[in-house]
Length: 138
Image 1 (cartoon, rainbow, N blue to C red):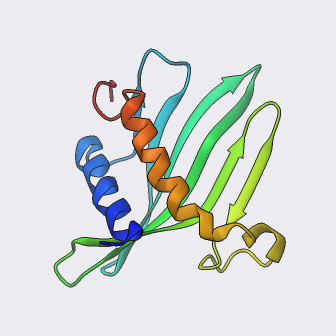
Image 2: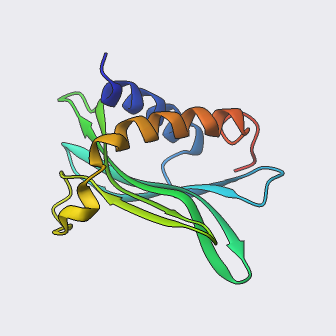
């Protein structure tokens, strides 16, 4: 199984946990994990997942990712393809687009696109460790 297939299986668990509508998961932290359903058709589902917080009235995201989940003929998710990544803290902003994302025409923003699959996998592990996927309140 490749990393995109593994990420799809992990995200399916998250979607099963939160249900079919946009949702936010709260823990003891000031950060909130949210999932937003964006676009859907018979071949794919696009979602946005983020950890967000408020810092003096300004929203922070660490990270926010847009992800396309491809489906097989039976509707099972086969791959999770990261399309966009944003990390915005008071001290640092990083924005990366996948080369698969047609809305980005700036090659400088796609230079690290190959990192997005591993960043997504690591982030899901951290979400579990931080209690968002096994102890948070939806």
